[in-house]
Amino acid sequence: MTAAHEDKYFPARLNVPLYPELSEEEANVMQTKLYIDEEKHDISYAELSSGICKISYLYAKLHYILPDIDECSSNAHSCGVNAVCNNTVGSYACACKAGYSGDGRKCTGDLEERDTVNDSCVNLFILEYRRKRFLVDIDECASGTDDCHSSRALCTNTVGSFNCSCNSSYIGDGRTCNLPSECQNYGSLNSGSRRTSYYWGNHYCDSSLGPGWFRFQGSAGTRMATSCPPTYRCGTYYPGWLSGGHSSVADGQVTRTVYFRRGYNCYYYSRTIKVRNCGSYYVYYLSGTPTCNLRYCGTN
Image (cartoon, rainbow, N blue to C red; front, side, top):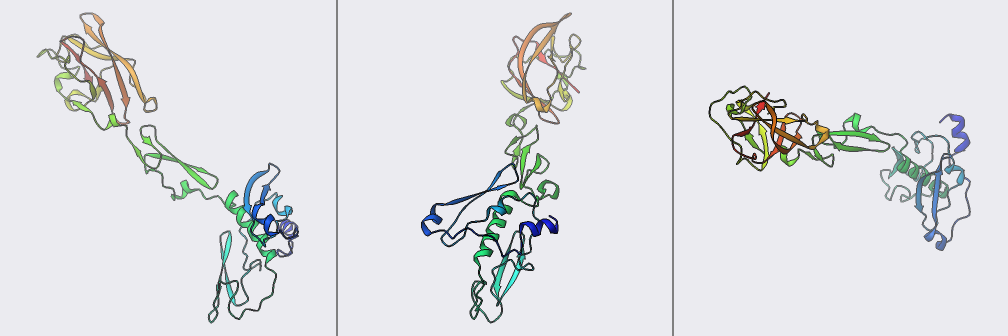
C-alpha cells in the first residue's frame, strides 16, 4: 500500500470514525460481517463484547493488501506509558517496565488517560483481516515447513495453508502414505524354470497356485510375459502370457486376461487375473490354471 493509500484509509491511525457504542444487550448478540474488495469475501464474524465499538465500514472496504503494521512505532497500540511495546506479525505485545507490574496495558503507577477504544477498533480489524485473509502467504511447500509424507506425497500450496496428497503408487491422507496391501504382502514366483527362455525340462503345472497376490522375482524374471511364448517354454506344455499389457501406477488395480498356448494356438486356454503396478514392480492376483500343464511365464 502506498503512503497515499495508507493516509486515505488509516488517517492518524487512532482517529478512527466510530459508530455509537453498543449496549450490553446489543454487544452480546451482534456479529460484525466484514467484506474485503468488491468481490465481498467474508473475512470476519467477530462477536463484539460489551464496551467494544463497532468497526467503521471504511476499514471493511479496503482495496489493497496491507503490509505488516508496526503498531509500536506507529503508536497504534494500547500499551501503558510505563510499558514496553514489542511488535509481532499481525499484532503486538505489551510488557510492564522494570519496577512496574500489570498486564502491560495498565501498569502500577500508570496514570495514562488515553482513549483505548479507538485502538481496539483498529486492532480488531487488523487482527481479523490477517487471520482470515493472510496478508503474506507463506509457501510451506517451498520452504519445507509442511508435514506431507517425505518422498511419498505431493505438497500443494494454498493461501494460508497447504494440501498433501499421496503419490499415485501410495494410499493415505498425504501425511501418512503407504503402499497398497498387495504391494507389501505377496508370494514370490522365483524359479528359473518359469522363465520364457527355459525350454522343456519337467512339465510343471500351476493348477494349485493361489488364489493370492504374487510377484515375479529372481531367476523367474521381473514380470509376467506379455507376448505369446514359443511352445514348450517355462517348463510346461502350455505356457501362459499376459494380454493387454501392464498397467501404469495411476491405473491402480486392473483386470487382465492370461492366455495359454497349445501348439500353434496362442489363445487355447484363458484365465482372468488382476494386476497392480507398485511403482518399481508388478503384482498379480492369480488362481489355479484351468487344467494341468499350464503355467504362468516370467520374463524381464
